[in-house]
Length: 226
DNA sequence: GCGACAG
DNA sequence: ATCTTGTCGC
Image (cartoon, rainbow, N blue to C red; front, side, top):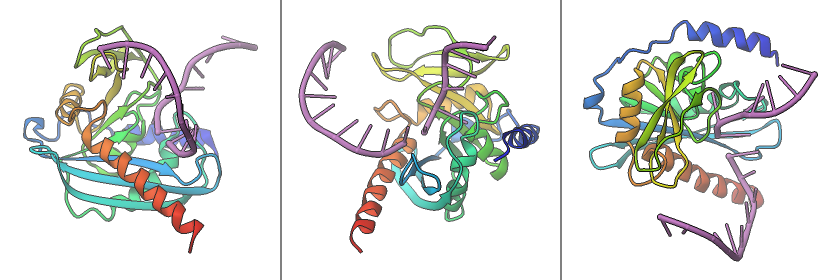
């Protein structure tokens, strides 16, 4: 595990980043949510399990659900999350039959010291439209935001706006939105807001997380029995 | 040198 | 990220 080498790889991927809209975000219909869990998060190696859920934004109905698994021997290291989660995500991605307009990842996009958070990493290697949506901040600073639904404020990093802090509901901590790849700052925020369905997290990501909890429980039961 | 640090 | 009951507050 050579972190200096991985940093260089991230910088190489960052050269391929595109922060302009590849699609007209007003016409987005199919949005995918991607999340990953681990059989034993404290052990290495361990089994990583990823889920991709595709929703039709017109009625939030589930269009497709796929899972992927991969034995992984890379620990969680801040700013290197992608190297832990991308392998199993790709296993799931290969099974997808539909072509979502946008992918939302659980984590940051360009709100990262080398602009290569997991959402950007995924977006670049698959050349898809991706957006990062984290539950906490990895990098950057933001000013206080009003305590009211859908209040947001820019997050600055390295002297520029790199994303937004978005408070979905009153008295709820904000989520952090940033472009992954092939999308602009404003459109990223727009897609996230359109993907929210009464909960703090965008519906595709929330469902992917819920499905993983069930999947993991079932897997643990199978191991326990036969 | 010190603190911060997605999941 | 995972484990896990009650508890506080909108």
